[in-house]
Image (cartoon, rainbow over all chains, first blue to last red; front, side, top):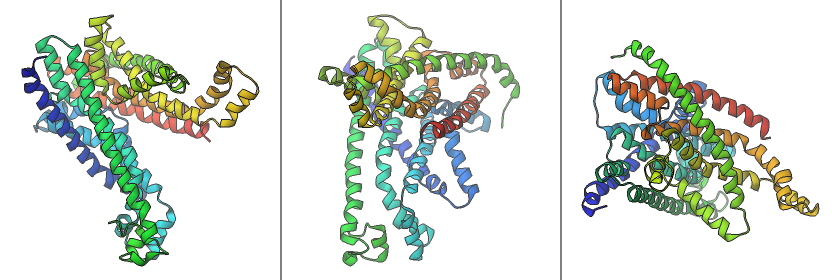
Amino acid sequence: MSSEFFGNWFLPGIWITVQVTLLSAALAFVIAFPIGVLRTNRLWIVRFLAGAYFEIFRSTSSLVFMFWIAFTVPPVFNISFQPMFAGVLALGITYGAYASEIVRGALAAVPPAQREAGIALNFTPTQRLRRIELPQAWPEMIPPFNNLLIELLKGTSLVSLIAVGDMTFAGDLLRLVKNESAPIYTLLLALYFVFAFVLTRGMRLLERHAKKRVGQAPAQTGLFGGMRAKSSIDAVAGTGAAK
Amino acid sequence: MNWNWSHVDDFMPLFWDGVELTLKALFFGTLIAFSLGLVWAIAQRSEKKWIRWPVTVFTEFIRNTPLLVQLFFLFYVVPEWGPSMSPLTTGIVGLGLHYSTYTSEVYRAGIDGVPAGQWEAATALSLSKRRTWTAVILPQAVRRVIPALGNYVIVMLKESPQMAAIGALDMLGQAQGYSQATFTYEAISVVGVAFIVIAYPASLLLRVLERRLVR
């Protein structure tokens, strides 16, 4: 594999893979929190609609959905967009559904007494969520988010099939041009592995940080030793001093 | 909005061919994933380092790289050294191999879940290693992991369209072929709906199964 091809195709491909990963992860994240929270709502119709979103996207193939957005939506609705937009949208919506399930699960794991404590302190539901439930649920979410992020990173290889020039696409193109495949695909596999490895390690650091934040807090600002708590809100949430 | 139902009708015969191929790939892929996964899981509990290590490295590598690139690798690189396989066979091997690394984690959890007393009881009865696995540990482990394994059947179904990239005429492959030949776009929607129609009832069924088996 000549360095000229590497520079012209592979490096930009790597950059596009990084972009697609980050953008679709961001979109998934933005979707996951409201949907996950709505799935714990009191009204059954709200729970049902948010749940339906999860069920639909859990039951479809992300590749088929991506093809659908890229090739069916534009002609049917008379609009046009870049393939990369279609790829990010498809990945973000699909993985947002999975991530919403993680958010829901983590929120459900917060002890009910914490919620009741919030009610007793006359918190609004939003305050309860922001000050009590989410801070406690957050460390629980990080390990499954990490797994999901690896799945998403691998999922970005699918965008090559709708002609987004990510690193898999670059590899495919190189195979056609250079008519050799072994070094190209071996390199590709190695690259994905390194990316996944780096992501896992990064998330592990984040997890340690988040656990420390919540784990440390009760000793300094717990309900009974609350001298250093800035307010009752921090005391209940158990995150006061570590902020 | 431009939508033409007659294209949907035209596509249906091809669609059923695609369904057949998808189900075939799913069946044999599942067979490979379930049996190889058990092999990995048991190998990773081996006392011998030279068995444990390579298996761990291999499964970690497979798990952390995309199925699509693995399919390309199997389809374009492997024939340079040995046998060349049809797109369907490549798809089956790829799916099976990829998800065997996931099912091995499921088996591992199932095996870990068997109480330590059961191992000790087997030792006390001086059962051979083989008898311990086949008569004591595995029957208890497998029962617990059936719902989780079932989940991977659905996951494999959803990932199987990637075979279309190496030219296998599964549901998506047929839709792609039809769309490109006729310059229409309705076929992909049919396939999308088909996935919901197959996968959603399957996941409901699994939930029932889970309630029965894991108590």
